[in-house]
Each structure stands twice: as C-alpha cells, then as structure tokens.
Length: 226
Ligand code: ATP
Image: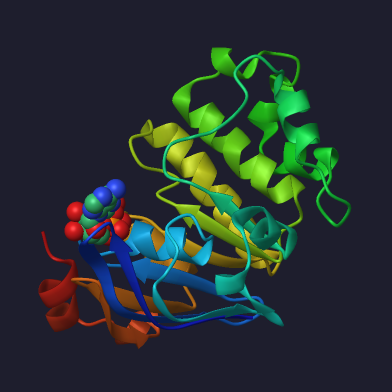
C-alpha cells in the first residue's frame, strides 16, 4: 500500500536522505530501524510532506504523495503519531479524540477499550495527563481518523515502564486487528516480535530489508549497535 523508492531529502543545503526504499503491504507491521541520526524521522517527515523529498517516489495506494500537501496526505488515509506528543491541552480527553474523528472502524468506544486509562480520564483536560497518558491520547487521536496506515515515531520513548508496557500491549492488539503500521522504536525487545518486516537505515540509505528472524548478530552489531 505504501511504496517509497529512492527518496532524497534535504534540510536546506544539507542532505539527510540519500536513497531510502521502504514498503508496507496491507496488514503489515513494518519496523523502520537504524541508529540515532540515520534518517528515520526524516523518512517519516518526507512521507507526510513535512520535509518534502527532492527526488524519488512516494506512493500510497493510488496516490502520488509527493504531489499532495500534508493535509491531503492525511485525508488519503495516513495517520501520524509524531515524536513528542501533540494534543490540545485545554480540551478534555474525549474532546481531543472527537475532533479528529472520521467515520470508520475506530470509534470513541473502541479507542477507550484499547486504552482504558483514557476512558477513566475522559473528562479531564489533556494538560493534566501524564506524559505516557498524553502519548496514548496521541495514538488514540490518530486512530480516530481511521487511518489505513498508522505511523508511530518513537511512541514509547522516555515513558515510565508500566506505561510503556500498556502502549506495547495496545500495539500488539493493533497488530492482531490487522492494522497496517509503520513503526520506529528503540526497544528491539518489544519491536521485533511485532514486526513482520524490518528496514534498516544507515546514513540516510536503506541498507537492509528482511524478516526479523533474519536479523542476525552480525547485522545487529553493524547497523543497530550502540
Ligand atoms: P533519531 O533516532 O535520533 O531521531 P533519526 O534516525 O530519526 O534519529 P533523523 O532525525 O531523521 O534521524 O536525522 C537524519 C539526519 O538529518 C541527521 O544527520 C540529522 O542531524 C539531520 N537533521 C535532522 N533534522 C534536521 C534539521 N531540522 N535540520 C538539519 N538537519 C537535520
């Protein structure tokens, strides 16, 4: 459903991506991996037109995403949970969820079933939530748009262990429900078991794509080691 081919992306004069290839098939959970600064977030920003690619192609179903502004990319069926949470601080949890709602499988009830904490806090202002709860709300808001492809960038980073576990449980539930997802996360222990496929970036290039079982120690040391 998503096909990214040979994209090159720049920040001003400085080139960040030198040829990224990536694909997501319907129902797949694809992990985008690589050490810090290798281009994962820039790839996501390019897909959503936030830092547009200068060359290469990005297609989603029948859409040529490089020709669309960001709001049309969201309308085409992509949902982004960006690094760092973005909710409306002075709206309640429930209002935050309802403002992004578009008709489809996901409803307030289903999001609240996925994240019971959001149900418990539905009338609280978003600004009173903990960081982890705000992250759950950010994921819930993305789901309320009923995206055919969900994109999660570091959704569990910097959160308390108990909250991280709740978010991973939700991600496993999304996988069980067949939600197509592109996911960036530093926790390989949690990420590899849910990934159908992994794509590794090194210095702005795709250097490996394969199933998690094929990701041996040599590859880990070479591309993912700290
Ligand atoms: P991390 O895990 O640290 O988020 P990443 O794999 O997502 O890393 P990117 O954030 O995509 O990597 O960064 C790729 C390259 O682009 C890096 O060399 C980084 O320094 C550079 N870069 C990122 N954002 C900007 C920016 N706003 N302006 C200039 N260069 C940037």
